Length: 400
Image (cartoon, rainbow, N blue to C red; front, side, top):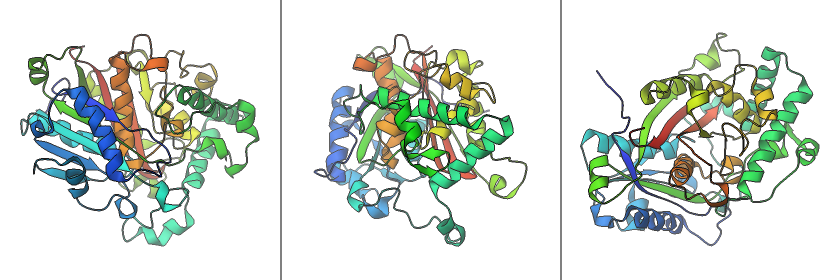
């Protein structure tokens, strides 16, 4: 019977480019920037990498199809390179491929890299036309802000929340992320904002305002993974291991059946519980000490806290306003600024989250360093509340 991958694979090294409007850099430049940090951190030569997984979420508009852009940019030694795409879970999907390859014994050292170069398109959001033959029928009438505004409405109605209190909690989420991002030299947005600015900003799709939305960015992030035994043979200590990797994909139920009431993210609840089971986590609120979640909109982060069991159902507004997820709270969330401020290059975001876990556990996070992080949880959500892909990764100290 399958036992999962807890502690079977460790991170040998990680790297991340600066995120932002990188007009002066090509996708290859961004990949090289992240990879050079990663391979120096790993302490190996590129010829020791035996296989690679390459993630780009919207390749038609920037990086290009196939695995060749990665192999050419990094001059990899004719090794197997697999191209992956899974919406906003693409970066974690690349990481999952590399981790599973090492865990299975197919290779000893593997690379996962994600990249996106979206700002050159001149488009403000995600420049995608379609996802499959059916989507052309209904996606023209659907927007991401509109869909997640419906999540806010469903959540507020189910829990009978005051409209003003929910909006204040959403504002707190954004203010917190900006405060954290200001301490991160690689973040796209590094300016603090006030609650008043958030509340007075123009609406995009009520109750979602301008500062409740994350933008898109250019950037790349990568990881090199191996077995604990190989890492130790290289003289590595303070090993950081993978505790769980889980994925849940909508099957049409949410979009076509009344059993889903639109107040939560079903895939997140399913993937999170699977991840906790794999990692041996019994009490998420007590055991998960930092989280990076998919804050495409501030309401998404708020609702996700309940779906991850980090806040009681219907109580996330209180937990947010009480500072539970602030940098000095009991469970810091988005300590690096999150999608909102670190940035959101689709193919790199999942790896960027793991990168922050890795830095925190290595005590290399600088001004945003947490005092004693034990387990880090990362959450990606690609798509809309009613139809999406959710990935969860849990990272921590090896053997703990």
